[in-house]
Image (cartoon, rainbow, N blue to C red; front, side, top):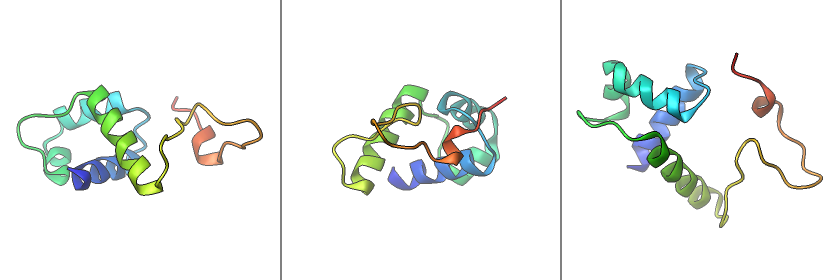
Length: 87
């Protein structure tokens, strides 16, 4: 399961897919995406993908809570890669 999440996040990065909802829709539509990620007939729900992504990133970063891209702590600068808009 973690490998599948990482592969899906790679597709999201490589194809500039702006949201998890769009990524899950693309996984549902595109058989080559589903093959690369290693999914069968069933595709994740967008909220399930987001929750599992947060758990995976928290485990990787060894932090109890992952900060969403739109949120940031006081005095913390948002990286340029997270500032771009998906228009």
